[in-house]
Length: 285
Image (cartoon, rainbow, N blue to C red; front, side):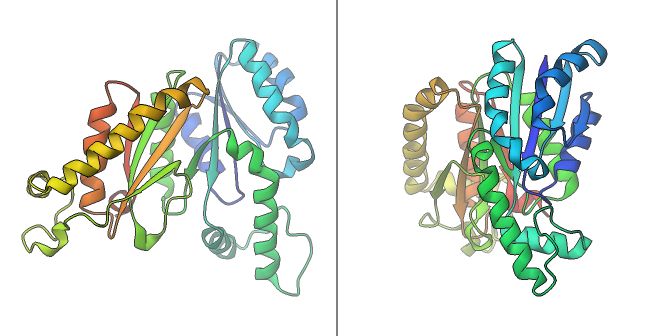
C-alpha cells in the first residue's frame, strides 16, 4: 500500500497538495487524528485500494508525537510511506493569513495586536512540528503558485521509488535561500552572463548561455567540486534512510549560472539516483 502523509505549516498549501494527490488517484482524507492512523489505514485498505493520502496539522498538536512511531509501524507492515512537509517563510504565511482573513489555529482570541499574535502562533507551530519536519521531504511553497505546487507534488510522487531521490534547485540569493534546502552552494563568484548584452535576457536553459559558461574554467571547477562532494556523501545519506536530498544552487538573479549548473548536475546524477530539477525564479514567471 502506498501512503502519502502531508504535514506542514498552516497556510503552506496542504489543501492544494491533497487536491493534486486526489487528481493522481489517491484516496484523500484531511485532518486525521494521529491516534486513528493505523486503524484507518487498515480500514481503507479494504475499501479504497492501495493509494492513500492523509493530511495532519497542528490542530492535532497533543498527539503529533505519536506519528513517527506509527509511520515506522506502517513500514514494518510493508506499506510504502512517503512523508511531505510543506513550509513557507513567516512573512509569506503572515501575508497569506492577512489576505484570506483566516484565523491561525493557534492564535487564540487575542485582538490587541493581531499581527504580533499571528507571528507568535506561527513560531509556536514551527516548534510543535519540528520533529515531523526533520523526518519528511520539505517543500518551500513561499514562491510557488498553486498550480506549481500541484505539479511539483505529482513529480515527487512519480519519482519516489523507495530509495533516495535528488532534487536540484536553482534560486536567486536576492529573493532568499530556499527553506527546504539540505545543501546550499553559492556560485555568485563565477563569470556572469548578465553582463554580456547578447545573453542578458536569456537563461541557463538557452544554448548561447550554456556555451558561454562551458568556456569558463571556473564553472567547470565548481561543477566538479559539487559533484565530488555529493558523490561522496549521498551513499551515506541513502544508508541513513533519507528519502530526498534537496541541493540548492544560488546566484544573484537565479537566471543564468545557477540554472546552468542545476541542469548539468541533474544530467550527471540521473543515472545514479532518481532526479528532479526546479528553477525557482524561472518557474515563477
